Length: 149
Image 1 (spheres, rainbow, N blue to C red):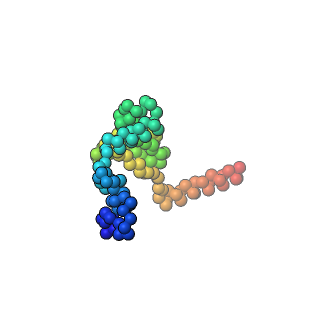
Image 2 (cartoon, one colour):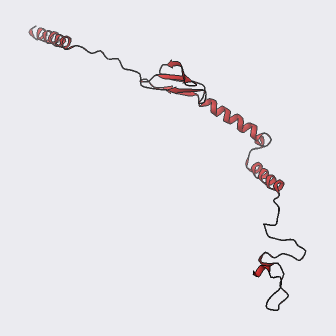
Image 3 (cartoon, one colour):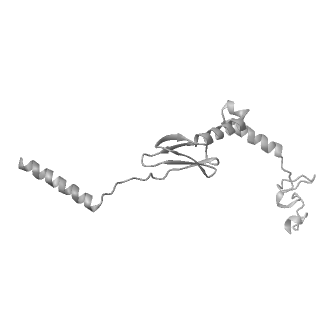
């Protein structure tokens, strides 16, 4: 291969040896495959970039502040609303705990408790045909009685 050839086939010996990456005669190389990664420098640059874009109170305890914010967000996810046509069914680890009326309520967030909000059953009273016909007859009699007067 041409880069393995340290000499020049054209007789011009003024070229630097080492092929396309330009190895110097003392053995150092600009080849990125021959360089070892500098992890300290990598993390130092990352920390400097983080510090440049964050407020000063985050710098020392950034992990702790982020964990506290995540915990508070998790706790805030426990609020739930039950509409007027619904009931709230609170389940703790899948077992029924309580049924809540309409309104704003709180429960332990997801892995501990969950809330189902099914529509509440609407109880309607059905009249039999005979009761309905009696009601119609009574209403008709009242209307007729009012017209006669």
